[in-house]
Image 1 (cartoon, rainbow, N blue to C red):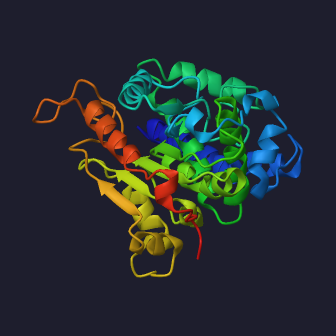
Image 2: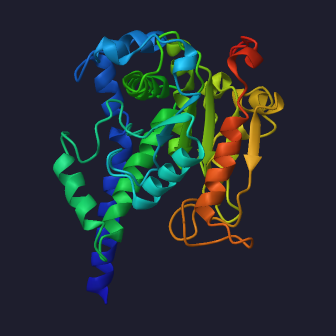
Length: 340
């Protein structure tokens, strides 16, 4: 018994030690990138210019607005993701259904939100070999414990995004990757077409954090859809024209943002978040008794509401209606988010 207890304590200490090291190293990727050790650092208010330098200019047409989709939706996966190219089957099904519901929109899902260079965990990185092993192991019945390291790593990256010291660096990098993808998919150099950043879980914070860079750098009106998102007190929310937050009645995970970030506390009245809320730019939507992830979550196509509608279709319907409520360029009247 003593041997088992000693082994359990040793294992627990090892895991806590590894998590502590991961937390300490979490800002390193963003900082090394910004310092130019990995690639040239961008100028935050010139995301458009920096992105175009890395892609062929022919991928950025200058057609009039009428020649483009009505909206560009950028999907950012949750903290369980390892790559934008390896979305879960449920996420892929959701995006397919959303595209069918919004044929006038261009949906982009090729940006990994937890890397400033869009480098997947399983890609060419120092510990890529380890993440590949963990990712393969998580697919087995005994891989649950190891999979938690992926969640922890990406959760620390969400904390970096929300950190006032490192967040602007991290978010500028992700924004540049989004801009590159937008231009490749035909977003006009003149800007003006609504960009909807759509984040699930920890992707919700990234979706808000990139808003200033997309708005200022691309002259893009930015809207955000949070799907069970962990929303912090990121000042970037001031550059979001409107935010729709979907939270299932059984999903308590988003409460992390309510509790841990002082700017979300209602008595901190002059925080960017509370000014945003008072301006009427936040719409909370309760899609039903959905949990955060797994069976019964926002993308479940087997679980149904009392009216027989699958959970995923309810999510799709709410997002479709939200996106279609976005005013046209003429209706927006030239008002820029973040003004004042």
